[in-house]
Length: 133
Image (tube, rainbow, N blue to C red; front, side, top):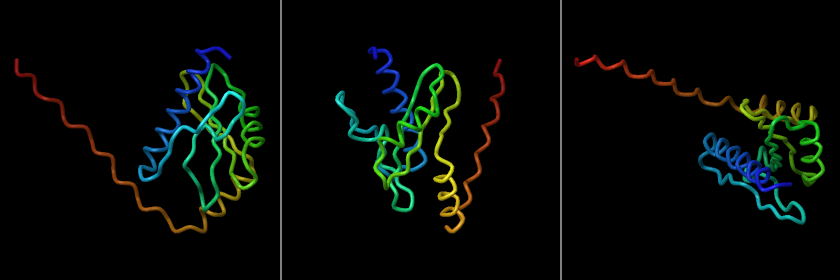
């Protein structure tokens, strides 16, 4: 893999970590430790749901293969972790892929949890300034 591709992958991992940090500012979300000889961490670390660590595999590029990315996440994740693949196609919105059984387990946990507080309303932009001329 060339330097451009490695750098693009790093940018995708950093962007994913930053987006998760924006939602969970109290958590220590960061890009995982990577080695050339093998993977030591997920691409993004620091997130868990109901005590289950989230194993995030990020793929960036023109048209990454979501099934291959999820297969890689499942193979690399320890048995107690929840593997998720984040796909960042060039110039498109990112999306995530996970196993159906894992999604169902998350939905069961979310349904049993107390409801989240309502999000604050988004402030309207200020009115335009009158033209002084």
